[in-house]
Image (tube, rainbow, N blue to C red):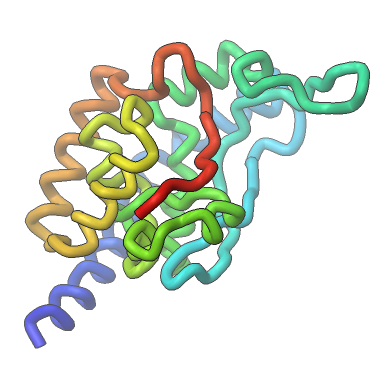
Amino acid sequence: MVVEREFHLKRVVDVFGAALGLALFSPVLLIGGLLIRLTMGQPVMYVMQRPGLHGGIFRLYKFRTMTEERRPDGELLPDSDRLTPLGRFIRGLSIDELPQFWNVLKGDMSLVGPRPLLIEYLDRYTPTQARRHEVRPGITGWAQVNGRNALTWEKKFSLDVWYVDHQSLRLDVKILFITFKMVAKREGIWEKGEFNKPFMGSVD
C-alpha cells in the first residue's frame, strides 16, 4: 500500500514538475527553437521512437542538434561531424532535453528514471538489464548522475536496475539536485573520444 501511494505521488510530482518546467523554460524553448530554425532549418524537433514502461513504444521529443549531411554514397556522416556549434552548446546545457517535459506530462516518461534508449536494444538486453523497463524512463536518472556517458553500457544498466529496486521520492529529489549541479558545470555530456557508441549486447 505504501509502495502504491509512492507510485501515485511520483506521478503527481512528475506532472507538477513538468508543467512548471515548461512554464519556467518557455523562453529558452522559444529562443532555442528559433535559433535552430534559423541555423539548421526544419524540422526544429527531432522525434524518435523509444521503448518506455514495459517496453511500450512512444514518441520522444528533443531539439535537433545535428545536420543531415551525408557522404557521396548517401550514408549519414558520423554524429560528431554533423553536430553543429549551436548543437554542441545546446547539448552542453542539456537544452535539447527540455521538450521531454511534454513526454512527462503525457505519461510517457518521468522526471527521473532510466534513459530511454533505442528500440533495437530491447533484444540485446540480458533478463537483468531488461528490468530497467519496469519503470517509466526519465529525463535524468541514477546512471546519468553517476558518470553518464563515461560509463560502460553494463555499468549504466546496473545502475538503472539499482534505481528500479531502490526508487523513492527522496532518491528522485537527490538525483534532480545532482543533475542541476552537473548541468551548471557542464559535466558528463559525452565520453571523451567517443560519441554514441552503440550497445551490441552483453552476457548476464
